[in-house]
Length: 309
Ligand code: GLU
Image 1 (cartoon, protein in one colour):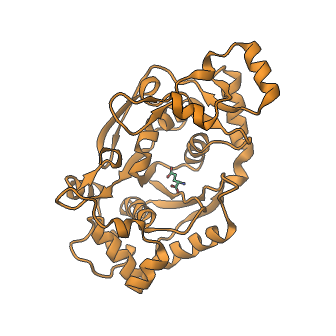
Image 2 (image 1 turned 120 degrees about the vertical axis):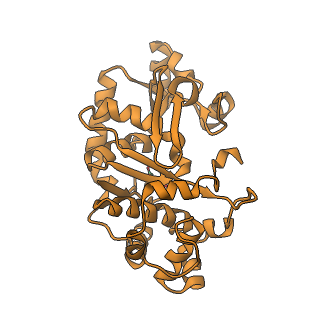
């Protein structure tokens, strides 16, 4: 069992990503597994070396240890390009010239969930003459053509989750107009190539999972599907979001309030339904009591999909 931390060094850590990392660490370690640390620094404008150093320091301080890495996405650009060219040579891609405003104006709402805006497929319909003309005016981004296919998987926390890619996802970006690989392609290749078989992360990425599974099966058919568990936002028994203040709290605020690493972990573990009382505890001590099954049982009923609220 190999899990991962995949932080983006675009800011300081906060309670939400510490919680996701803690559960990822527990899921891997409860099964005798290991953790890979991957720094998702594709977004060059927002990624900063100082955030990256702070993330490494904070994980170490919190006792959230890793066994491999850090691996940096900026070292993997050749691999992303190779997959991009493979997709292109299989006629799976098309250039997209839409501006952000056009995408938003034309987007179709997913029929069953409000979570996603589906690209209308505007540029998929362009003739080759139009593409040639637009290419001279502007650098396009690139989208992959998704099929009319239902992708379904069992999430370790939510249970079955299904999406029709054409209706509920739409053709999605694999390369940005500045030439950088898009998150969806990079994360799929990294997870597969780093041998990750347990993906634990925030529920905001649950709607991205069907497209990642589909793309992974396409570009890395030899690798099995990983197991997913999406960590919820927490709500109190009256249905209101619990501790929004905590969810948004930066690590510095948490350090000031809870003093020690055990204090911070204990508070997050309590808010996240891992322990009954708000008491200092380290990941190492939590590990012996943890199982994904009892965790998901204990939090069901306290969880809400963020787009449903
Ligand atoms: N880098 C993303 C983040 O920090 C996580 C991506 C993932 O877990 O797939 O939110």
